[in-house]
Length: 162
Image 1 (tube, rainbow, N blue to C red):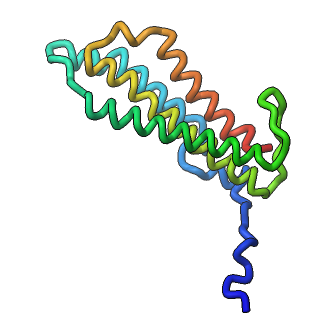
Image 2 (image 1 turned 180 degrees about the vertical axis):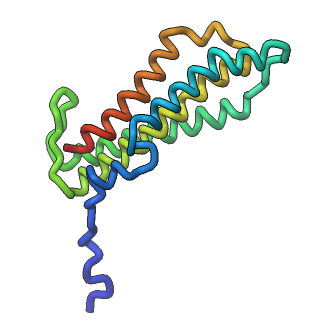
Image 3 (image 1 turned 135 degrees about the vertical axis):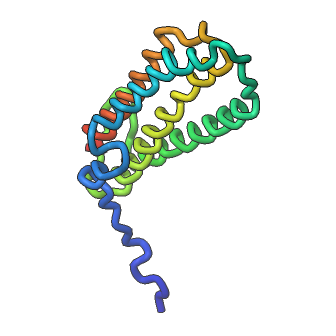
């Protein structure tokens, strides 16, 4: 007698169309608003706010943030290896995923997680400004964060494991 007869029959149909309904992926206006708010905060609002204030000491936040970054990266790397374990995987080749498969499901989950991770990484620059380390807010640093958020958004909305 089988207690859970359909336990191995999991529906992995969380794919392209459903992903468009996930928060933040439905319209490019969301990512545009996030990046505009980020730029306004680091170049106008927070520097003006910090002008007559002492730098914040954010050691606890930085320690927790770095620990969460490490755990998040371990999760992403583990997910990549789990996706790749179903076939020969070369980083220089495109990996085509079978529709409605576990690999596609996992790919969509990992990329969506990465999307939110990249948005959370915008807080690094905010920490620089709050600690009055404006010299660390270089054009390259800001460009890097804006481009990685934009690229992972494109990956989530246009590629989606296809």
